[in-house]
Amino acid sequence: MSNVIDFNSAKLEMMKKRFDELTEQSVITEEVAADFAISAVMDIVEAASELGFDVMQEPDVIRDVLLVMESIRGLIHRIDGNTLEINDISDKMFSNIENTESALKNFLTEFSDMT
Image (cartoon, rainbow, N blue to C red; front, side, top):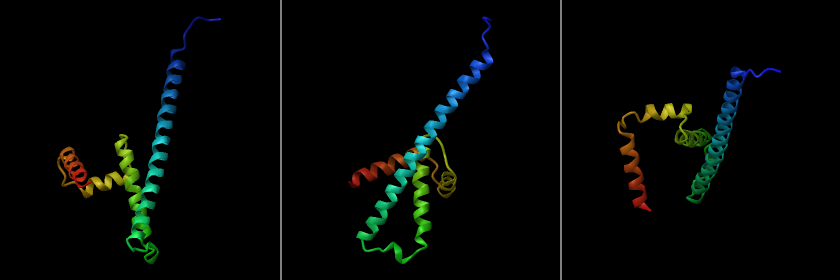
């Protein structure tokens, strides 16, 4: 029996544990993001119906529905510190916003004033 500590094995075990934790957090974030996106889109479809818009009249609306879902998923992922491909698209679309911190603060302030 040896009293030699295998530091490589211990380091590998710690790295594996950390990877598993990060993977689990990533899965949880994606599940929350997906569930939230579906719920929000269904609320939008229901509200559109209540306003007299029948989404079934225009089947191409599915593309817009999926875009909204991806945007919501991207929103949740960005808040969590990660990005999806949709975030790259929004960065390019709204690249004219130079001070995002100020823009977000102004938007949220204006939005809260409306309610």
